[in-house]
Image (cartoon, rainbow, N blue to C red; front, side):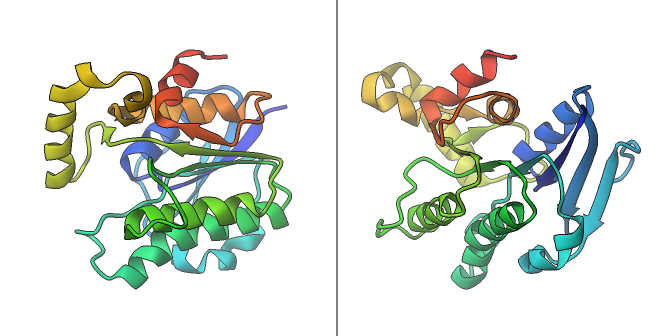
Length: 221
């Protein structure tokens, strides 16, 4: 039986790759996108729902699927207001998890970040940690939280901080082994493929650290 998938953040780097892969995956009959604006020139396999994602609960009647791929995220540069930042990076993924639970969606995949810790004194890490904690509290049967390091890929917008970080990490890559391996660059392609592989597996692993993302991605079903 073919499946229906929901993608949040399909216009972003990782989400756009998830969308491309699902479009070419015969296991999926319908792909639902929830976003602020529509994406042009998509096939009829895609159904788009537009509106304010900060009020995701208003989409509840249409928020039905077999799987949810949450690739939502912002940056301090794009969203300097910390209240709004939290509403996006914490609020949307948690609201999506709540809707998934309420609508009996059994598989939920979300992109978090390395260093996520609800008790951290670092704002970014704390928000991600709180998001992970509250997503897991919904007890969705198959919950997968991916914790990439700096994400590499071709973005529509240029992020200077990430570009500098990538250059530094590329230089330091040979030094990343053992416990430091988790700080290696994470390719968006691998994150997207790992999410899809996990959603179509029998794995019950809930937290996928950065060093394991590539391994799961290349072991295609």
